[in-house]
Amino acid sequence: MFSKKKHPLLAVDAVVFFPETEEIVLIQRKNEPYKGYWALPGGFVEWGETVEQACIREVKEETSLDVEIVDLIGVFSDPKRDPRGHVVSIAFLCIPRRGHLVASSDAQKAMRVKLDAIQSGLIKLAFDHNEIIAKGIKKIRKIQS
Image (cartoon, rainbow, N blue to C red; front, side):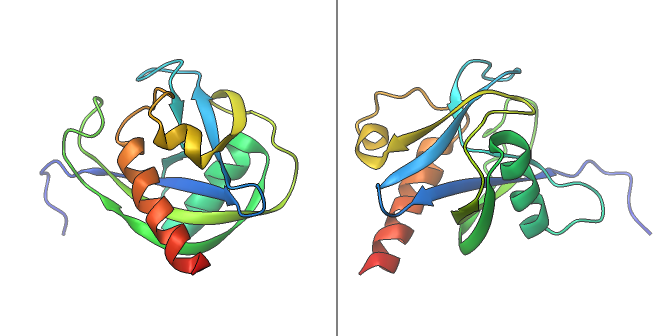
């Protein structure tokens, strides 16, 4: 039924937005690739779960926050976006519902960052997360207007 050809891996990324403070959540990666870089919470979709379930699970695992998905930001499929190989990421805009921000799983740190600080380019981000955040900010502005 399935061919033996290689296929891309599927991942999710979350822009967790705190509307009252205009901040999003970043995690500092504990592992390669991009060890020590800041990144959006996210990871690989597990067999049998939806991308939405994977997004909520990954955010909880890496940040200890329970989130609600507000909207789809987009699909990011450049074959070179991840040095480990062809990984397609589906990115979601989320808002926190419960919990306190605490790094866990494969995140060594977690922090809330003002949108202005990210847009200034002073924070070194992993993968194509600058692009995902830029599209997430556009989505946020559209929702807020």
